[in-house]
Amino acid sequence: MYRTVLVGYEESDRAHDALALARMIASASGATLIVANVYPKQKFSIPPDQYAGWEQLQREESARILGTIEAGPAEVQTRIVGSSSPPHGLEELSREVDADLIVVGSSHGTVRGKILPGSTAQRLLHGSGCAIAVAPAGYADASPAESGVVAVAFDGSPEAEVAMHGAIEFARAGGDSVNLIDVAEVPPLVYGKGGGLEGGYLELKGTVEEIRKEDLDRIMASMPTDIELKTTLLDGDPAGQIAAASEGAKLLFIGSRGFGPLRQVMLGTVSGRLLRMASCPVIMHPRGIEEPE
Image (cartoon, rainbow, N blue to C red; front, side, top):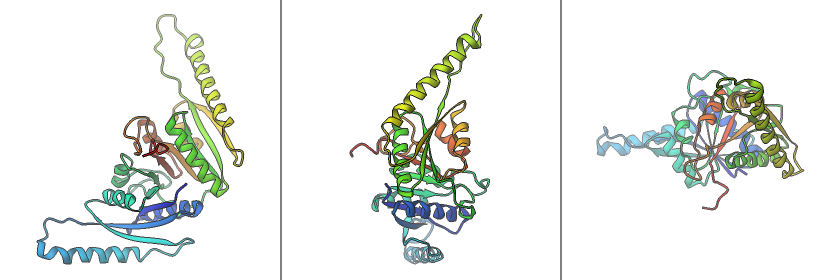
């Protein structure tokens, strides 16, 4: 469960979206919420004898920005960070405060209700050591999700199971239900002479669906009984189907890609497409976080 949630903040709509999502997650999970403003620490064009005064002005501006944050239902801690870039500053601070989750907003100009990671989110989604949550554009002004459903993009992989357990813990704390959304993706077939649907594609499609159904049944049999869980098995394009099935969910949990460094978030092909098609907040967990250091 999240113990410390970190969010970067500046004077922008995307920062307001990120802060609103971070507050919701921290409130539901009982986590400490830390709001940070990152200012550029190194400016080599400034003479050394003037740098100290310049940096002091930057810190004062950061303090002013953080001072504009309105009070919320939970206490907010603020931090001022000097770094070469916002993602680098947030990543360093996340290690310092042992954050479990970093929350960011979508890129400027993103269609309302959709997600488009900006440069900071992109950097964090390709190597952060803790979970990353991305808020859709306009999230701060939208009505909170009333469905009480936490969705999971599930494909039976270890990375998907990490996302599933994170969703279950979050849903249990907030009294929500969990929906495991799986897609039976049939590989493309090349038809030769005499080939056809009946003897090829349809048979393979049925086999893939049966395998996915058996996997979901196995997972459900081992799930806790103190929370409402259901499964949704679809077919077709995984990213498009999961995005449509998770519309209106409070959160969508997805796993990192199945290869790369352990204990790091790594955006894959399907997860990257899903992130851009989703219309609800998305959380991605690092692969291997269940393993000891």
